Length: 370
Image 1 (spheres, rainbow, N blue to C red):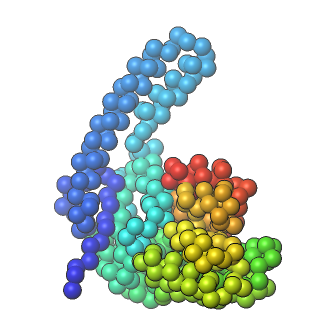
Image 2: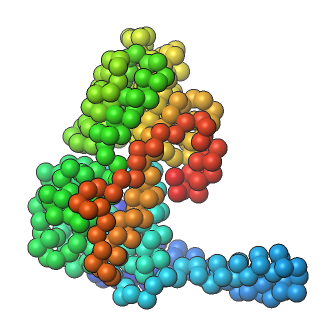
Image 3: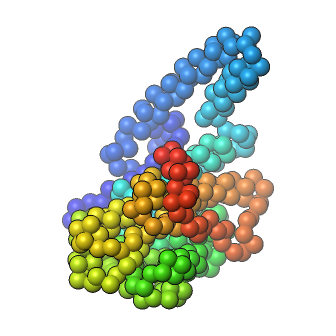
């Protein structure tokens, strides 16, 4: 059997030689070097900005203000905004390799970690038992807080119980809102998947759709099932589930194309993740279908598709906000015993976005925050 490689990221540059960090794949071996190079570049940049600021000091008030703002930004770059202890938080998700959605989640988490003086660790595995083992590895390292997804909650229950027994606070994100409180988490940050699905059904009704496909790319993911069930609940037309192998994009495209070829009455296809929207667009073209392609989640390509009209609408759950808020809420709990949500999930979605918002969102998507 081929050994699995679990991807682990440590945002603390000095942690490159830390013997207490979890195991990581070969692709991460140069991370500390890159971080030190980036640190050096920032330092040089800060000097240049300082020199520039001095040279502009005698210019107009506008020019002087811009120089001062640039100097302040350079001085604050990469530095914590607080003086609390340097706690370590670990995030473990159910992401498979190459899923760009989780890059956005990490982007938000890393930004909050810098601000809050947090050493941030990240690991992922799309196999639930492996994900649980990664949580156990963080417990063994005695991290100060854990952020975890519950796409397959039953497999994660024991790991969360062990974290609670070890006195490590846990926040769940993205999936598992129904199980979060039951499993002992402080709160859940994400969208309610059933509510998000209901929003899709209502939007399809507004667009006059009659028959839709809901594309499930990960069997056993409770959140995905909830999305499709929610859409069926509010959709006045007929919706069918189509299961595809999400780790094989050619299979995703061919499966959708085959269904569209055999059923010309399908007038809407809903994918459950941004990377699969483009495959659905290609499938539509290959089948000669007139079906509208819609999707959950947003990225740069989806924003461009909304703008061009190749996509009808997207359901944004704001993954950047999920990562950012999870780290920030753990920091608030450690610092001030604050808990947000009052026992209910902290919702980051759903937000239906269309061509009208595409231009603005495309700018944010390009920088990796939407």
